Image (cartoon, helix red, strand yellow):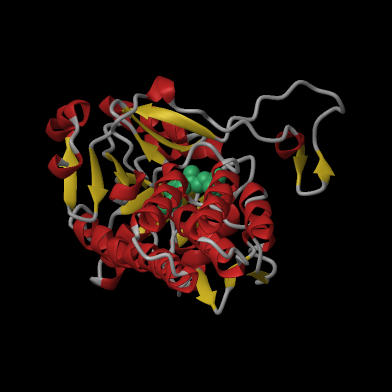
Length: 344
Ligand code: MRU
């Protein structure tokens, strides 16, 4: 299923804050509606944020009343700036916005209608590529999964986090489609419960056996020998670490302690090898996400709260990174420091 679609100037996508109880579709028609949807996590997950960023700028292009190319380009830049101010950690959002901007700027035509079409086509291309790359990630990763394996995953790196098929869940889906009898353990992923609300929903819907645990049960299930492999997604992969949903680092440390392989699955649009982990901004979200579950308050009013949305797992904890062209293993990680796009 496509999670995001362009329909004549409207972006149609599921409101993920309403899942699993309601399947409500949003019809996004303005750049401000798109930024609101991203900030409030109606749309979330790194690759989907990339597509949403691209379509958000495409909406601005579609709605533009500019009469000159210069005016049009400045509206597009303004839209890209708004998109980039929504959430700081997932690099796909910046990657896609910059790709659209580059495309618009390098065109020689001054015909506004042609420029609009080029931007909309590029956004569609970003979405199509994501769908196709995720299938490849699935195929590349499925060879790591043995018949009978139980895979632990954290957060939601599924169809809902991408344009189609998922990244970590792509590997799980591909292994399942190959006929391997696998099981999944999904961490609930406090505070926003992407594991409980989204991963459990997707896998259950698709008939893939899934068991939900709270985040603090991971050590216990690993010690009991119930986990064969961990696979998670990523929001940004830098020279020395993988950024993903808060709690991922803890799972990686536990996996190492219990000799369980720990893999990351992500498209190359999630790689940001010109940066190191200390240069990345970790989004700090509203304290209410911690003091409340849904609308129910679970902590004293006024309590001090920390709410980082992501953490960084150093590469030494990672057995491999599955991407659309193959798998990087530990010996490949050294290349990340001397990165050239063409070489990775
Ligand atoms: O805050 P979210 O829900 O956008 O965070 C999502 C994650 O951390 C996912 O694991 C990551 O984006 C990988 S998605 C294929």
